[in-house]
Image (cartoon, rainbow, N blue to C red; front, side, top):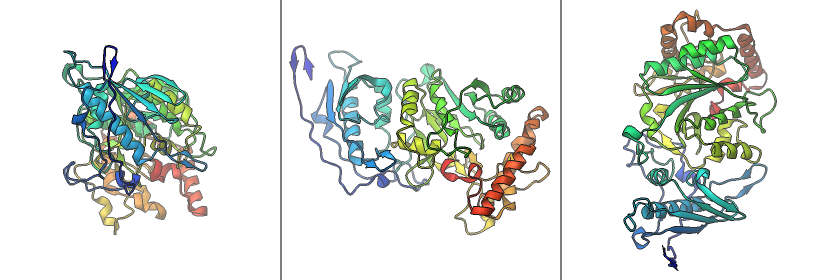
Length: 456
């Protein structure tokens, strides 16, 4: 604590988190979402006795790095590293909220020592004041930090709907839904149907579509008519993807962080249909998403907070941080190890692999907000058939559901003919579909652009 020329130093006492607690315990593959969010339990991460440390101006901490992995860079999935960052964040929040000497804006600072710096999921690069060598000085945005410390310690619990202080009523931030089209026009119909489904849900948010130069002027006009505001981008190649693979240019999704005219975005892949209004989920912090498998999130439906600093960091790190699948989802999960769990009804994957019989494929829960179409997309089926064409390929039956197909067709049928013309199955798309089937038949690796649940 600093008073004039006098500096008072307090040593923060804490209990080291148990070495029995693993990252997978904090970020389990599955939790019981039928229970209230605070009914499920997370592993215990000890915190200091905060009432002993009042009115701090600066918190200094040594932060560990994660372990090095051969060929994949450093892993930051380190429980003790998370504990240190959460302790500093909580100490700052409790000091920053104090009214010191009649002031409501008590400035607090964090100083981190270590080659890796703090977790940027908690201490944003936008708040970095100074960095040299192994020293990092931050002045955190206290509103955002307060919201962060109220989140669960991991995806072991659903994130509670707690707003960032000051972001309600007249001061509500500008927000939008966003998707990306690049490299071909194969997903144009999906983007049009997605926009129409969002509009049908009575959303009040902007709809932003990023397109590269593979999307023709005529198609752009159709996308505008569907409801999208168009922004042109230069696509970004994944340094870890093989040439001509489905995920070669998927890092183009990183461009969404450049939309700094918005404070929050919900990114939605264009193979989604929105069934219920999802505007209420803009209340959550970055990075919020539904789980996918293991301890990772699915990047097809996620909340992000645009920032040029974040974008530039992602662009630098893409050469150093390997993606587990070569695509954006693997990379983003390495960069945002600490994320906040949304319920699966926000990203209902059309994958019925674990169900015992095909009749159960038709059971789409009534409370689903967003339906994520895996396998062959609905617009890739012939328009004269009223069933899911995934049934036609044995290896793809896990993705087949006539009920889900009809939900998409209802949106399609409600669209004016001027929009439906963009859903014609082109010869090029037919050729690519046949190529994927042939690839599957020859080596068992079916059309990953269509069926890879790790990056769908």
